[in-house]
Image (cartoon, rainbow, N blue to C red; front, side, top):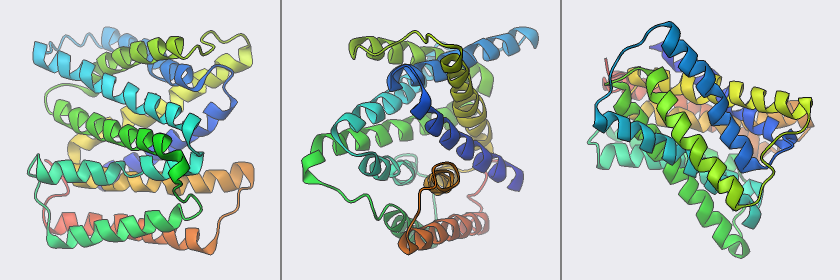
Length: 290
């Protein structure tokens, strides 16, 4: 189980790498996300063909897999659009609410049982997130962008929940091939509507898009989804909070961005809350689904 936990941490670190690379993409952000989902389909299809995976999905599973990709596409699209109307800091703060939304849905609607101590861990994690994003603030002038960022978090939560449900009935590669293909179609349609540049024109731009697909999807989302079958939804959503910690660390290493004492305390609290959450769920036998 510890192996699954650390693989998820590795996947989250790769997602942040992909977010950094998008800064250098020649094409628009929605288009970049579209390639992030489309390019791995070549690998996924090749793997399924080579291994002669003849697993047949029911129509219901097929539709759910396509819907999963639709939700992921909307998450990425709404986040991109929110940046037009709000600051990156505010959008990041609000999209990082995803773990709390996922946990809420898991407890209220999916009846996943957690102890009272876990609610304390969630409260502690939320405090850490507020300190970590202390420089963001929320401006009433950015109301539309902030709501779009919240909608993005809701769609990512739905993506995680549906992916976890599907992992109980089909392989990661088959599910993610369908989800990635459907999601990329949605994103390219939106990129066309928003009049973004779609075709890369330089070798450097193509290399960046390949790197975004590798880190953001193959070693990011797909690796993450492959492991959440073995970990409870409560734990797999709580560990997402490590994402903004990686983001700040990468910002410091790559762009010499500094952070305050408050943010350092926030980092410590988030890491502590993830550790405590893991222990609480292990003791209450909710950590794994095996």
